[in-house]
Image 1 (cartoon, helix red, strand yellow):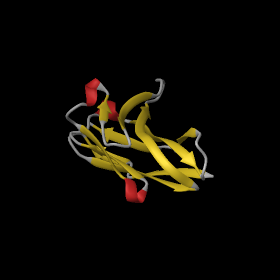
Image 2 (spheres, rainbow, N blue to C red; image 1 turned 60 degrees about the vertical axis):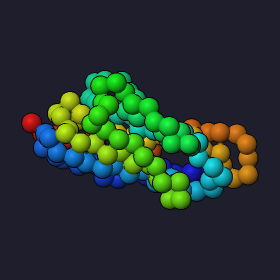
Image 3 (cartoon, one colour; image 1 turned 180 degrees about the horizontal axis):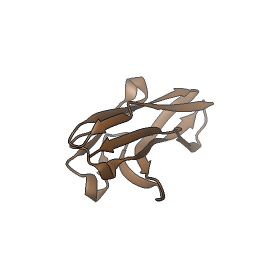
Length: 121
């Protein structure tokens, strides 16, 4: 019923920037919180940033100042601007959305399939 599709990943040198996008489609009534998470090889998935329906943001402490999350409600899209990238930022980045489908009232959490970000030193 709902799909999340990430884009914008790739290979970048340390110090470079990337902008990830995640577009939600399907029978969407409303989207509440949106978020980005990442998972590096051999590690657990971790929070990168979240943004509420009202635009309030929350970041992993280690990423504050380098990453910026934003959303375009008209396009059902969430973005992650990543600046001054470091090799330790290498991971698969997943978007996450809390969505009310159709004309229901129940919120369901959806995940994208992920986009690879590789930062070379």
